[in-house]
Image (cartoon, rainbow, N blue to C red):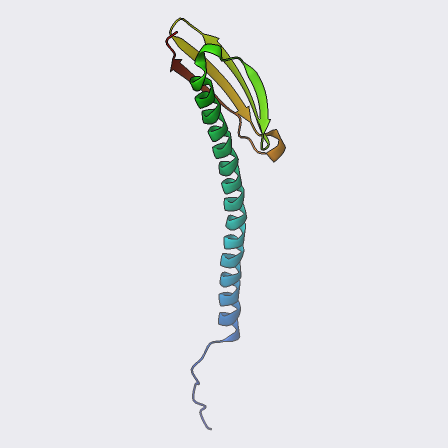
Amino acid sequence: MQRRERVGGYTLVEIIVALLVFSIGALALAASSGIMAGAMANNAARELAARTAVSRVETIASQCATATSGHEAVRQIESDWVTTIGPTTTDVTEAVRCPALGRSCAAKYRATIWCPR
């Protein structure tokens, strides 16, 4: 009886298990990429809303003696602000939101501006 020498290599079961592990890893990477893309879009919308609010406060600060309350929609960001003019300061409360983007980026900002009259 002749003995056959064992040839080195992988069995079919080992290859199938390796492919299964690789496939699961690739699917997990693809799923997390989609989640990260959504989070980045949400952060971009929030950052745009914050820049809109800062811009509004700076505009009010440049004309604080005649500042008025109002509403504005710029680049899919809605902004409502209320000004309260005191003897030496102007208080600004601003609410921004992004309804057109379908993201939850609503935020409120408050500022007190030194404005001697």
